[in-house]
Image (cartoon, rainbow, N blue to C red; front, side, top):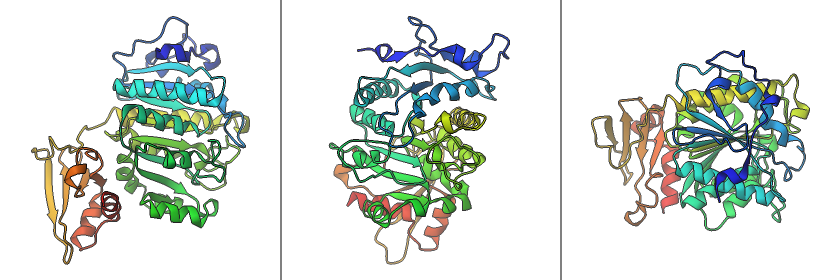
Length: 394
């Protein structure tokens, strides 16, 4: 099976693209799949945009399947920016007879792209498609970290079928399990029950309240840098900035804040897929939510094309590109080893991994952190991020 069998062309008439548009607009630069039999050449592509018109597993946001072309309309009007893009828009996944068939198509397509070093940017559709994205990593046999931006934890109570309110439970319980860490940014306490918070704590997962994130948004960068896969629920953005969801709330991230977070995602050398979900054009006002998501994707592009490729792997962390700091803490059996990149000034800390697991968790035992974590260690405080990873290795 070829991915071309699973994709259908986009209708450029829906995107209001004209020949008079500026030659540096993304409509002129993105190579798009617009005609059957004229699929883009992916050999030189860094990023592939995929639309997924699937919402049969949404509980209360029917209509979000229409989002991809609304977002494209505004994305294509934006300028390239101070970076040269190699982006292909490979059209929309052909909806299957059942939602599970669409999941299979997403799984196959995303795995194919990642395997060929092409980063998928998914425009949904309902957020249960995050499960299909995760399953692509099972195909690749890759243990990963997932980061979501959401006002609640989609754990649900109904375990019989996957939907947009319980897809996380399906990921957490799936066997074989390829999830090492889960992080949620921006949850709002009144949308989360205490049992869910206790579960996250027991699993040593990272969850951050909206106010905690907004208080120092720069600290989000190392959190996001630890993710392989990123999923955004549009309802995490405040209703005044993004009304296009049945689950929109008065509180949430401001537009500029979510754009900054998405830019951090683009900057992460580790991140290999991202998805934007739950935008429902029926609830939008003047299509401002579609316009905002287009700008979020633009910021992801900007981050991606400013990557430093300085992740300190076992082959390069001893090079001259890093400064190594070793911190000893009184009455603590382990020294904490930090690495600071001379290229980007970003920080990582090394968590001891049992010798038999080093190959399996090669990408997990070097944990992105910030200068604040190093300062905490110097004050004889073990950083929370270090403890959480260490507990998972026990």
